[in-house]
Length: 307
Image (cartoon, rainbow, N blue to C red):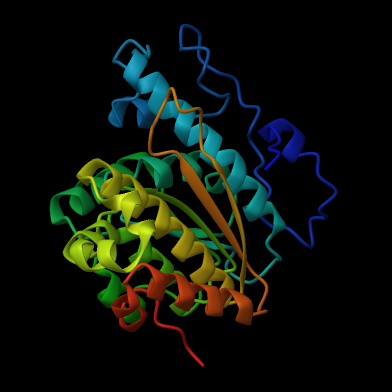
């Protein structure tokens, strides 16, 4: 997918009526002595609180890598936010498995902060991280950010979230957390989902359990006979299944790299846009692949197809 810089994105032909989410203060001056990677208008206090900047306003190598990943992902997300139509209350974004909410805070700082409407929801099961994020948002005056201590099942039913969410993100959501984010996005009728999976192991476990039977049944099982290959092929199959599931659920899907492999091995970026056109062929191939790999039990859980 070809990306555009934030400066070019701001010059799109989207009218004010079709896109109410245009940031207004992106060119605010940057304090002297701050690392050159930091963008004009960014909250230096936020970046220090997230330990991306040192107290002197400097970046170490690990922070520079992390910031590059988030910036690159933000370029994709900003384009989607700008494409959303105007609505009362502004656009809504839910960051699933938010962790320390690096992504949510930076999106708010770069995009939502200068707007009069719109809201970001960070959803996380670890109470201590939710409490820290709430405290930081209050300290910075980020009033249109909410942090909810909820599981995926709870988040789909919680009165603290609106019935519909415009955009769902999940950055490095481990194992089945990406599937949880997809389930949430489907329930909330999300127009876009932006997913960066990480450490998916459920399919690999299923492949291991049925390895002996599979080796007798098909030569394809040689692809996961060794434990290292089981992990790698399990990860690859998982993301293929997710893409087919999204297409069968009415989304168009694009798969690309987040950043170069030298920066992160957890590098696959899945962007799904709701079209309303459920692809029957995708559902059929999903079912066939699950059967071929001895994973049909997942049709009753992770990849349950509706009518």
